[in-house]
Every structure is written in structure tokens, then in C-alpha cells.
Image 1 (cartoon, helix red, strand yellow):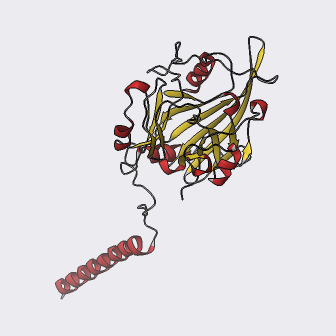
Image 2 (cartoon, helix red, strand yellow):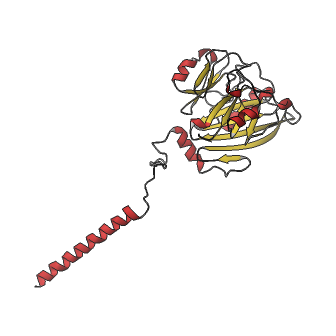
Image 3 (cartoon, one colour):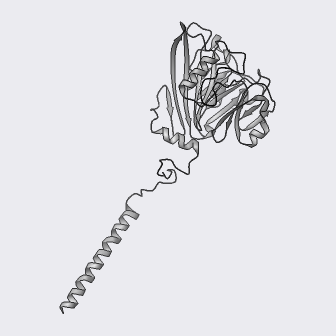
Length: 307
């Protein structure tokens, strides 16, 4: 009889233990929130970066934690981060004012260019082109209608396949950037390789190791209003606009502009059209003070939300 009770007691204990385990499993699996990420949250590997994300998305998500709150000088969303700032310095007793827009984009679709009147060969008001395209932030482009040489690739479309002497800056669909000699650039091959934008004004401002260049493929090396783009890594770019030919700012030489991009830590930098064309807008308003109120331009470079 004792043996029967002993066996019965252990059987009951085993049943109760199994029931507790099943209930615990059900609680965690069916009731409590799952610790695994949903479809919009990447699986994070040991190195802290998702192996399923593109380089652009990785860069964006890594910076998103440090992004500022949207205010009059910045814009933050799940696809775009823009931080703008104004800087005034003095060099050799002369004032220089420049404007910086530090930009992170999650998708290449956020990094766009636009033609005036949506027409190749046209020119138009800088702010109107930006408003028409819902630009969050914009700068003037390479004024391809004035610069007759060199290729024109805009948002993946080849509008002009022509070689020129100016350096060519190419932005690819994966967010990477490359600067090549104009005479060596094959526009059709570049489009086939995924070229998203190509500008032909220049020159390149940094050496291969990110140092300020000391010689330039340009004769316009003196102090002028400037507009330029810098590259860090896929998804992270910076735009610089320098006022010039005015009392509050005399402009920058190409050497000074190159030194600025080196100090910003860019790996590549490229000069766009300057002078009266040099304009920057944020939140639909001009950021800088263009020389002689600016002028009409043929194209802009801008940042927008994904559509």
C-alpha cells in the first residue's frame, strides 16, 4: 500500500510540474510581447549592425539615436535627418560667412535633383523649383545650361552624354560617391552601373586620403561665393554654401573651401556652381544671402521625404 501511495504521489508531482512548464511556455509564447523584432525592426547582430540592412540604412539608423529634435534649424523623420548651422569666421582680417547642412538619408530616393520647369534646358527661380518639388532642403546645382561640357545624369536618367574637361562627381543608387576625370567618364556605362546623379562643374576638393587638395582642375580659384557637396559614407552627406562679394562675407578660395571640407572630416568633396548661382534653402526659405539677390538656375540638388 505504501509503495502504491509513493508512486501515486510522484505521479501527481510529475503531472503538476509538467503543467507548470506548459503554462510558463504558453505565457511567454502567446501572452507576453515577443522580444523578436517585427517586420519593420531589423535583427541586430553582435556587432550592433543589421546584416539585412543596406549601407545607407545602417548609417541612418546608427545616427538616428543622436539626431536633434526637429526645430527651426533641423528636421528629423524616419527617413531624413537635416541639421543646419551658420558660421562666421575671419581670415586675414576679412569676414567669411558660410552655411552647413549636414544630411543623413535612409533611401537614395530622398536625395534628388530637379530641372527648372521639369524641362531639360530651362532655367527658373531657385525657390520656386524647390517648392514645386517639395524640397526640405536644397542648394543650387551645376548650372549645366551654362556649362555646355560634361554629362548630365539626373535621378538615374541620362540627359546629356558628353565628355568635358571638368571633374565629374557621380552619386550611385547605393549611396556611394565617386569623382573621376571628365575625359575618362563614360556616362552610359555609369548609368548601367547604377549612377543616380552626375555633375560636371567641379573641381574635386580633397585628395584620396581626405586631405585638402593643393592643385585644382579649375581656373576659378580666387575668392567667390561657393556651393559644394561633401561625402562621408553612403547615406551621409554635407552641403556647404559660402556667401561672397559682400561686406559680411568676401567668399572663399578653392584652397580655403578644400580646407573646410578636410576639417569637416569628409572623404570626398566637390565644388558646384558658385557666384550668383550659390543659394541654399531650408524649410522653403533662403538660408544664405546670395550675391546680387542670386539668379535663375537650371537645376537644384535637394532632399525630400520618400514618396
